[in-house]
Length: 274
Ligand SMILES: [Zn+2]
Ligand SMILES: [Zn+2]
Image (cartoon, rainbow, N blue to C red):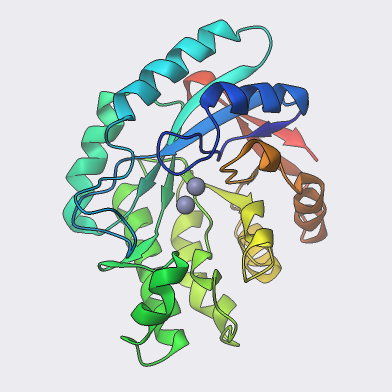
């Protein structure tokens, strides 16, 4: 069984069309393929190089939903297509938007991710060094990040299914704090009290951190807490679909996992052996 639930087509920041992504997924032998387009981000939250007045993905959002519905039908019998989205957790002040987005579309699943701390889009290289100066230490940044993850999980665990790239905060960090895993544990504790699934996200291999999200130590701690996992690529182009999944599986097995969650249409979940 091959699958990938965290992928982006060209409605917001991906390179390829939805059809190109699906054709590539079929060529790679995937059985289940999920689109997780970024929901249009609230206009108050901007990366340095966003165009003035631009809200990423806003113009194409209705097209996205309609196209995935039509692709589901078109490819029926060849590949199971899932309609998902990656929601940006900004702060508790914006939870009503999450409730509205969740309710107005029949998602097969939603990924919940933190990309912003306050107004700082920390996962964009052009913003990283500048924003970092506003904190006393890298430990403080990690602590603030995991507080945001904790807030998302405690406030909205009924509004999403997958925790996106759990330790994304390390993306550009060269001086990873020695207590990086420890700083993440309380967020893992709250995830363990929910039905949320954590992803092994292979996109980190291509970034400065040069490893998957999350780290192997965090993955081990997740396994100790019986947090279910799935495998995702966060692909923004056809060549990255289901990338490094064999490595991700080996990593999962090395800390004790012997099964992963596969999502299906209508929100159904299946556990498969790895
Ligand atoms: Zn993301
Ligand atoms: Zn993503």
